[in-house]
Amino acid sequence: MRKGLSLIKIVFVAITLFLTPSLVQAQIYSLSVVVEGMSCPFCVYGVEKKLKKVEGVKSVTTNMKDGVATLIAKEGRSININQVTPAVRDSGFTPGMIKIAAVGKIKVDEKQRFVLLIHGVEQNLILSGLKDTVKENLLSYTKSENLVEIHGTVNKQPDEAWTLSPDHYFVKN
Image (tube, rainbow, N blue to C red; front, side, top):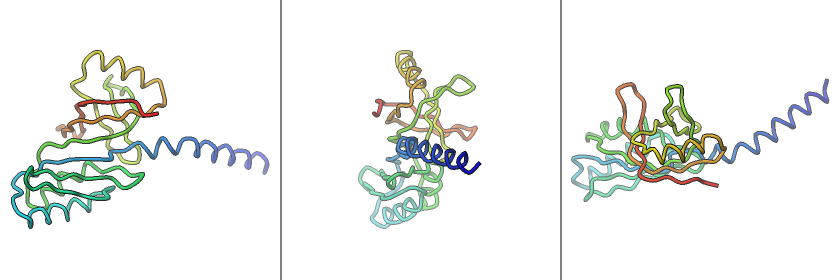
């Protein structure tokens, strides 16, 4: 019995070691949000202070002229997109367009929608506005274990889901 348990432990550790690198890479690693109304250094300070508290954020840089705050994720973490717009509102401003760079696995959900799976947080992204040729490529990725990197614009839907309209994407090896 003890040998059986030891073998199970060895197999579990081996599987964990092989799977962990790809799962750690699945994340929203960069996010830019338009902050409407930001017009002075004190505004920038207040926005950055709130955004630095967003789960997974390593650093925040803000361009006051363009009104954009850019968040970079901590190593091996994902930015929690659900916390970004409330953080901007809590700082006294209105959040605008959000663009992300994310890495994850492509799956097709029960409604036959393409979804980018982000590990470690409950924020899978429904891919929208896809051309037929893109759908064909993405369908081939659902059958592999490859990670896909996607850059694009995200939008919150009334049903609390996030959609991602890709600007471009590529397979990570």
